Length: 204
Image (cartoon, rainbow, N blue to C red):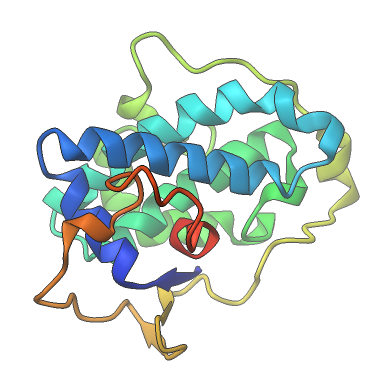
């Protein structure tokens, strides 16, 4: 999968594993991801999906931290959560929100099969053991969109590894090296006065 990776991703990584501040960053990242993916949906479908996406993305933050703790690099840990989201979008028929075409789902699953199996994550059950005790809000499916086979926001051809574009526009396979001087204050949500700067770039 092709993702971006800049200083705010590194700051978010550190912040999410830091007490107190991690909660603010978690909430901000959930809001950002929900808004960005809803922006890809038809306007009339957005609000009916919001609660579901909020719950879903909140759960994937736990997945992200677990992947980091398991030794995955930042880019791969984040890619794992994006793959979970694409499994969920596929199951709901939300083709327009998918980042990868449906015929690449199995290949992405196989790359992280050991991690997915450890936590009971499958295409049919994208959250596995990370599913909240209270569950995830329901949202209507749109199977007709999937039947049409139009994945207008999907980027094909990057299923064999994590591909990241850094802050300088350079493409790295597997992700770039983590900077030594990462400032947690650069993470989304730490400074509540800075709510809109570079949001979309951070969500990828």
